[in-house]
View 1 (cartoon, rainbow, N blue to C red):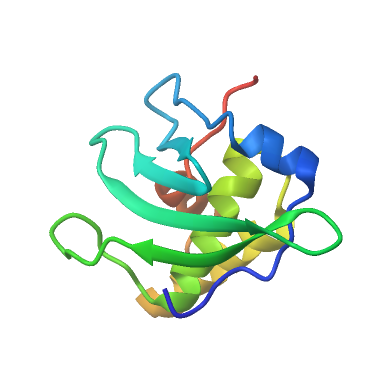
View 2 (cartoon, one colour):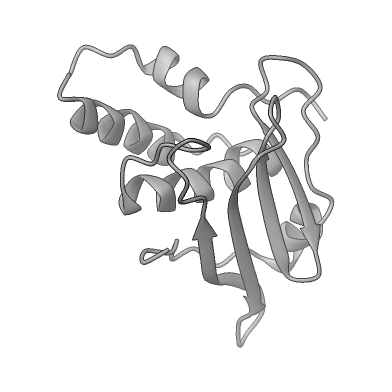
Length: 138
């Protein structure tokens, strides 16, 4: 991926991220698991891997994504651009794994989706549910 999130996740965030996230019903779209320093994000229905993000420690504490890849096979995943993939990867970690509200990221998802599709009348809820899904209580 040419664009990576700027966020530095705290050590406490990393402890929670390492636990991953397992979808519990059909409205949840993502399975997340960690091997070593790599976070894998797979679609829950198909099991297909979409994102892989490598994390590294940051001086002063916390971790950041230092490299990432996105599925390039258009039959398996249809990307709408680098900015979208950067945002989605951060949104999955923040909203799904950590359970944060991530309002700015959610708004960005809706804006990028509308721009890519050339429409402005898309329902925010429909866009978010379609791409991100829900997160059950932990």
